[in-house]
Image 1 (cartoon, rainbow, N blue to C red):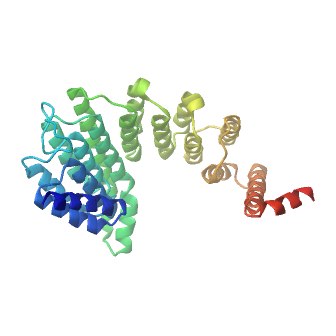
Image 2 (image 1 turned 180 degrees about the vertical axis):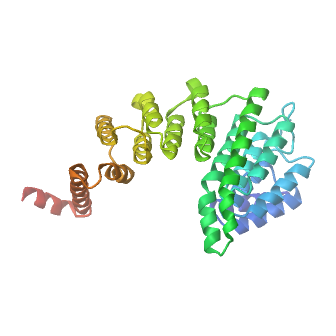
Image 3 (image 1 turned 45 degrees about the vertical axis):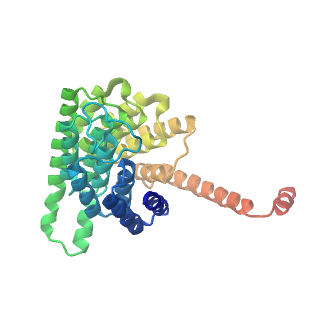
Length: 343
């Protein structure tokens, strides 16, 4: 019997690695029935359910993990004081992540339920809260695309209210999560700040996004700065975007510059957009950051059909020709390349 149980475990991990979702799920069910499923297998099972888009599987595991008196531990160790033998912080994080993979935002309440369970059992930590905040940010970001999909499927026009409702819910839950972290003494890190700023930015609460950025202090890094620049771009606040970009200094990335350019495109503030765009191009060149499609698209929107726009299109065309020539040469035999170089 022991050998058979070990074979089930091995077969489960092979199927999971091969992304054979249904087979892996059936093997996990077998391991659960025979009592050999440990916390690591449940974690992998949640990842499989998330990848397969099977929220019903996630629901089943969540119900089971809440009700089971104890799970086998991967290593025979007693759980730390205040920790449950059923669920630990990594499994709670995996549950929240799996629920949050549903981009229409309908599972944010489930994410909140798992977080609350972790809090009540004394196992909520920074990673658990970060997973929840990321889920909240996705619930807003995916609402528009999910709504378009429902429209194509013949959904009612009343779905237009879902974006506003999702944003309000995400903001309220993010407020609660940040306040709870402070009350429990759970430390914030860069991911906490970036996810919270993303929620507030997508919900149109630029004031709260700015507050979180200022509160982040020393943990603020490029990702946190990029989140605030993106929030400012969404609101058309080019001044805030440019100030935040300047505060990043040498840590600014191509993502930072592209978000700042997008802020210039959307801004209706009284500033010289062309002059700022040229300054950003110069700074990017000095930093050794190559312009990509997003950069060029924003620059063309700012420059318009004038000489600067025509010059940028000519530069881009020349770069593309050079890239094509290099790719063509790389695909040729070495002797042919040397012959062309000599000619």
